[in-house]
Image (cartoon, rainbow, N blue to C red; front, side):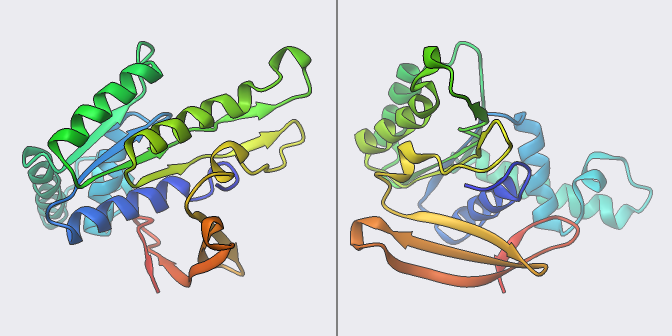
Length: 220
């Protein structure tokens, strides 16, 4: 969780690429609730090439750059053809029961399934009594899916109040196996992973680097 527009998608996209590049039997489904599928695909192409997303989207006069983009596009499409990567975007008719049923079928076909859900909590918190718990309900659905499937499920989003202050999305932080905190301090990035199930033990703490062009995030 982090503030709006604060590298959540960059971190999740980077994790997605790391996972499919280093785990040959893994299938990864990236669910983008706020971003069109094509934008996520272009972002991953940019990360593979070290170019900016704008360079990926436009026609370049430099043929070497075009060749890099083509090569990265083919690499990603190879993961798609091998049924190791799928990028889903939100649909009006895409309800929670359908999502769970679809993921159950994927799990039967791919035991090494990992799901990344980007943008689950893009809404505001108010004190309106008629909306008592609607804000936790959506993340609670993600928690139910996680418990039902028992697979690695990474969720990223922001939850802000009426003053624009960040509030932790408690519904899935409360029962999650691990909480990932991405912090920017003095132009440096730090990632902390805590496990509440192990007495809030710190599982990982490290400094990250981010490519200034593609925004791919790696261990420093």
